[in-house]
Image (cartoon, rainbow, N blue to C red; front, side, top):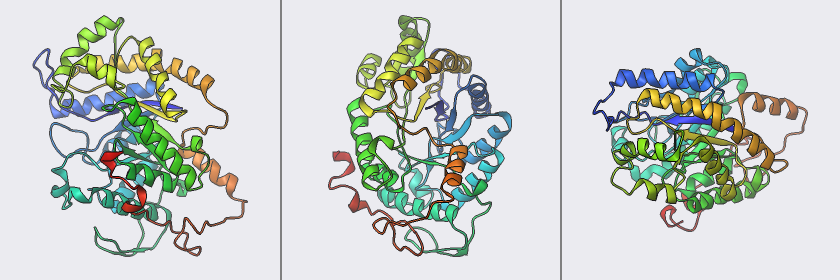
Length: 396
């Protein structure tokens, strides 16, 4: 199982001091976070993609990932998320393959639609097309990574004629893809259709909602013939704040929670802790709460924590990373390994995907007619929005 952190890159005034870091300072601090996460043995560092204040998470995360490839050694560099709706799939194919080469394969992607409405028209898109854009753009991205001389025509971008994306993915192994969503079963369906990972943000919603979305993904993963439902690749988000006692943690974190851009004014800290996976307390309490996630989603492969939101000072953020690496994650690894059911797959990595391809090299290839447009081309059928569920996403 992989453990790590993700950042949304917000520039938020510290409510206890009134100080707001500069964009340059926030960016430099993000690099330091990733370096420390690598040093303390975390598995994943993920960065969001934003195009609007108050965020300085990169408009092109591959730029940050390329920098981090130089200053880290082992940690997987991921996104949280890459905006598949408003970013050209050609640019995604090129930029992340390039970053993958620079990082020696330590790159994967989490794709998402984005929840900031004004961004869509800035890039010539309509938010009402969010699901169709995600479906069409990802279908093209897969072809760009898996084929050369791509000829393609869709609804949302200009056609391609004999186009080859360069550089090609490292070792001809495309970065592993997670599809991130909080409330859209269509995205869970898309992840299941392709046999990709599904990542539930998990921060703002009650456990029963995450359980429902993950279960739906697992059922559809099995339906499409990728393996058992328990073989599906699942990731969860979470937010934590730790101190030597719960009382100290609550006292320290409360002003940041109360003034946070996403939390502020929407309810008390105690309400959020009762109703969502937000955990504020000691490292042992974070371990206990995180182990509880498995009770309602089953065995899963990736757990990412948000620890730098809402104007927390950089020194405190770095302390939280040290606590995760030294106090929390070692316990979680040991306990998750003991509790893990037999046969549950590991989180995919570049090395594991490369090994799997080598192991299959002598197998006779086959094509599932129900999954392909044609046996000759082996091009996956693109799932249609109205094929996904009989209900609207917000009704599930």
